[in-house]
Length: 102
Image 1 (cartoon, helix red, strand yellow):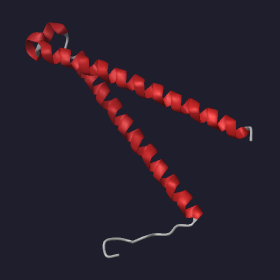
Image 2 (cartoon, rainbow, N blue to C red):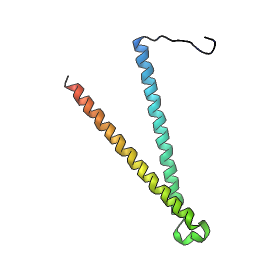
Image 3 (cartoon, rainbow, N blue to C red):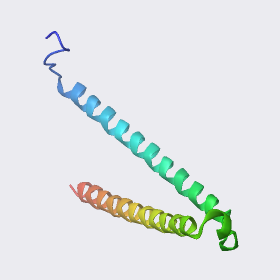
Image 4 (cartoon, rainbow, N blue to C red):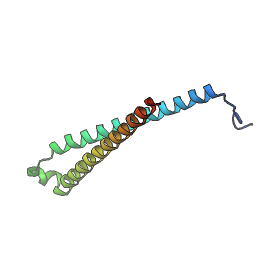
């Protein structure tokens, strides 16, 4: 095939290794994504601390309120992510304990 490798045939150990690499790459990408989101949320919180209501004449009240709204939404998304991760971890433990009984 001129455009690439063509069809590649893998034996079972190679297939398992490839799947392992792909799963690890997905985990690392998710960790980077989550870390970036955490950094952005921390930056929003720090910025809001520098924008007290008494300074609305300078920053504009609407901007501060929008920032508060973004902060609340970020907290909600973080909580939602943690709940999902906890649920997935519980499912994995349940499956693992079920496998131990065999």
